Length: 164
Image (tube, rainbow, N blue to C red; front, side, top):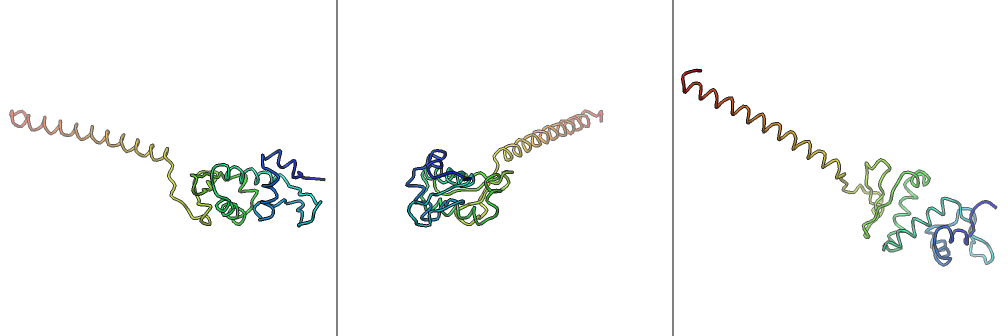
C-alpha cells in the first residue's frame, strides 16, 4: 500500500498517536489516503503532504500557539489555493501570537489568522540601503554646498580687494 501508517507518521513527524487521532477527529490534519471513518481496526494512511502538514502543525504548537490559532492558519492555507504550491513557496513565521505566511519572494507578509490580511511588512535591509543612499546623497549635497560657499566667499573677497 502506498503511503505512511499512523505509526510511521508518528516516527517521521515526532507527533504522538494521540495527536494524530485528535487532529484527525477535529479535522485539523486528516490522512489523505485512508481515514478510520470511526471504524475500529481501520488504519490511518497518510501521504507525504500530510506528513509535512503534521510537522508544521506540531512545530507551531510546540512554539506556544494555541490549537485554535493553528487551526485558523492551517484552514487559511488550505482555502487560499493549491496546498502543494503553499508548501513549496511559503514560510510560516510566528511571534507567538499570530502566524504569518511569507511568500517565497519575501514580497508579502500575510496574517494567516486574519484570512490573509496583508500585514505591515518592511524589509530592514532595503530600508538600511535606502538610508545609506540618502546619507551618501546628503554628504554629496553638503560637499557641493560647501564648495559653492567657498566660491562665493572667494568672489566676495576678490571684489572687496578690488581684484574681481
